[in-house]
Image 1: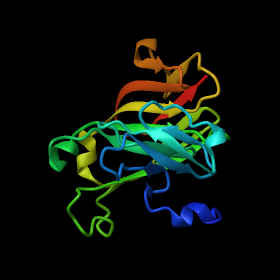
Image 2 (image 1 turned 60 degrees about the vertical axis):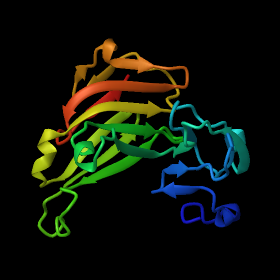
Image 3 (image 1 turned 90 degrees about the vertical axis):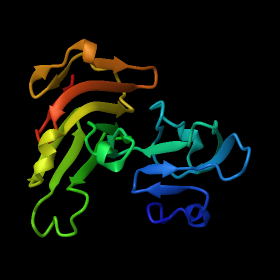
Image 4 (image 1 turned 120 degrees about the vertical axis):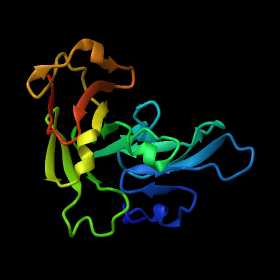
Length: 212
C-alpha cells in the first residue's frame, strides 16, 4: 500500500508483502495448499525463478499461481535492479560469496538500483565513512555502475559473478563490458527473454555493459 497508494485494493492485502519497492513475496499460509492467489498491482512483473514476464492481462487482478512445497512464489517489479548474494550456512559465510545483479526492465526498458555494504556490525559506519555504496542504472540497453563511496576495506575481496537482465525486447548480437566483447560461452539466452552473463569482476570496479 506504500508503493501503490492509488490502488485501494493493495490497502487491504495482508497475505503478501513487498521487501523494498521491488521484491513481492507471496507465502503459502494454509496447510496443504499448493497454490496461492496473488494480486498484481499495475506494473511490469517478472517471475523470480524463471525470469518470465507476468502477462499484462494479470495486472490489477487476483491470479492463482503454483506454489509447490519447495517454492515460495516471488516476483520482481520492473524498473528495479536487485543485488543478490548466494546464501551460505551462516551470515559470515554468506558475506564472502560473490554478488549478482538482477535487472528487471520496465516498459521503457530502464531499471535503477543501488547497494550499500559495510561490515554488518558497526552502528556508526556512515559517520566514519567506512562503507561501500554503488548505484546501478540501465538505460538505452546499457548498464552503468557508479561507485559513490568506497570506504569499506572488505569490499576488495568481493566480486560480481552474474548479471541477469529480464524483459529485453530483442536478443543482443554483441555484448561488451568496459569496451571488450564478452565471449559467447559466458552468455546464456532463454525463451523468457532473459539474458544471463557470467563475469568475475571486483565489486569496487565501475562497469559499463552494452548490449548491441
